[in-house]
Image (cartoon, rainbow, N blue to C red; front, side, top):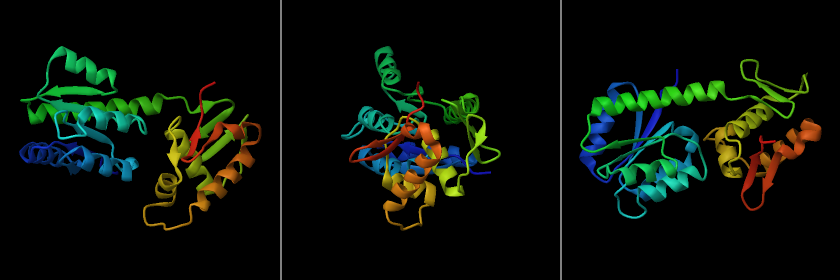
Length: 227
């Protein structure tokens, strides 16, 4: 089973080490970032690799609020804020900006890891409960198949992987680079036109639902699942 990867972002090395050591002792893979710039690079380069972010607020610019905002503009990855700013206003601000949980310093490392585990469980349960059917399209993940109005579409493995990744990130504008990396693996150095070709083929097979895959000019593609 794949280990969950947690990105720990804090400008204090001792905090990163403390949190990282506790997470590793519970079987997590850990990546670290010492400031907002490192955090954004670590996350945005390969967002599909990060399962949860522990994010400090008070860091040299960009601060935690800015990092959270940029993460939320591209992904729904759970974010747990870890900060000395424990006032009600700060916590409400964090939740308003899209944080999933909020822990104040000083903190118990054991309880922090328990919050991480609980948050990942809730995220996994939400994904399972989320509808995999919209506008006559149904995704059968165990069977690696997509059905349109009850008819199984004749998709190649890569077309299925592409559609599934678009669905898992529905509503998010995905760059061609990100799609190439996620669907064709990190070590695939292919032409970005590979993505365009597969999107074209996928749209052709979706027929009247082809417009569900939107072209985001200057960026890439996004799957629209809302009515």
